[in-house]
Each structure stands twice: as structure tokens, then as C-alpha cells.
Image (tube, rainbow, N blue to C red; front, side, top):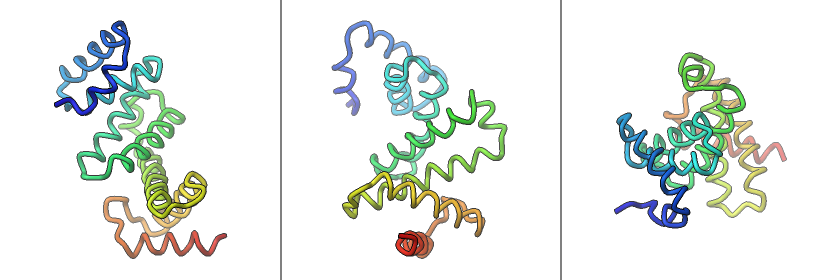
Length: 166
């Protein structure tokens, strides 16, 4: 079953043809079905911006495949795409710049904050996510801990800092 079929069915016939071309190009490159679907959707939505679409599809599928929720993966992908497009013009630049991890960490911090604010019904989810991202980045780079090894105690320290900064 195609989990994104509803989105496809909403497209006009000419857009379905474009979608199929973008989808097939990613499958031919060995990308997963989910990656190809997300990439094709993004190409349609982002006026055929290959770099932006690739960034979004990469970020989203990476986190879905790691077992993160769809909501978290979506928020991460949105911020990752924004950070990469604002600072690079292609994946070669991203892959060759060791500093690109900083932008990944920023996206992760934002998504963690967004997820927490959403789960806890904060009034202003975006403002909370931005504060969380800022504290997260400051703590990660002060302690040199990567996002893959964040534990509950580290999360609690971030939330304490946010609470104390109001």
C-alpha cells in the first residue's frame, strides 16, 4: 500500500506525470520508496527546487527510519531544509563542510522543543521550540554531546534552563 496515495490522488494529471518522473528518478538512484515519495511531493510543492526537496526528503526519511514519530520527523525536516537552503546551494557543499552538523543540531533541537511543546499543549509551540533550540545548541556545544546520545537527564536540564529563563 502506498501511504502517500491520498496526496497523489489530489494532483492534476500533469502534476502526476511530473511526480512520477521525480519519484522514478530517486528510485533509479537507489533511494527508498518513502524517500522517493517525499522528494517527488517536495519537488511539486517547492517549484522544482532539487536541493530543497532533497534536503527535506533526506531529513524526513532519516528520522522516520530511526524510529522517530512522523510529527518529529516533519519538524526536523522543515528546519533542516531551511537551515541547509539558507547556508548551502547543494549537497556536495553540505557533505564537504564539517560545520554542517551545527545546522543539523539546530534542526534537532527545534524538533525536540516542538515535540515537547506539542505534547504538553504549550500556548505558543513555535516560540517554545525556538527557545528550546537555543538552549539545546548552547548545551550541546558546551558539553560536546551529539543529538544521538541525548538522554532524559540532558533533556531535563534543557527544560530547567528554559523554565528559569522566562
